[in-house]
Length: 190
Image 1 (cartoon, rainbow, N blue to C red):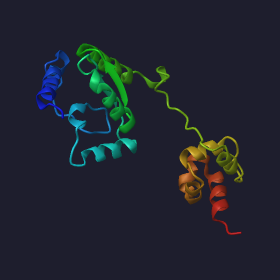
Image 2: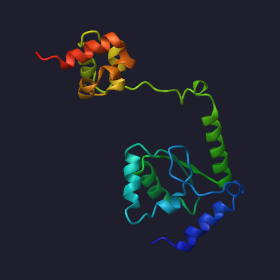
Image 3: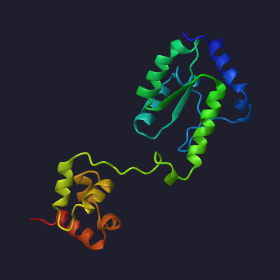
């Protein structure tokens, strides 16, 4: 059983930190980066844990969890690590002190503010095609070759989605003429 006095002590400790005094407001769950105190999330009750798990597994909730790992908190670290990484699917960054945590947060904000083209880790990655057989199948459609097939599979990841796509949906990816060929290929009766 978790001691409520000890939990409050941890909250007060962070609230009294130099950086903590400057940040005010209630954290919200949002699409943009936000701050959330995991101490209040960990012992969730009344189904709140299922909501968090569902949001995390769906990819709608992404984040980085910063945990102060000291001699006193080390016994709780494996459980927190399992909860954060395996259950929530978030990145866990252990820090030794509040000052290290604040420096880490500042560094993360500065990296996010940089132009994406200058940071190779923030560049948009090309989607990997999971099945080479699917790629070869799409290449067999008239008008679609080695260049347009991967583009189509990035936008329409399955044959069912590709076959149900309208000409208007296909045009931005492959152009009007090829879009008409693809649509005719899937809709003509043989």
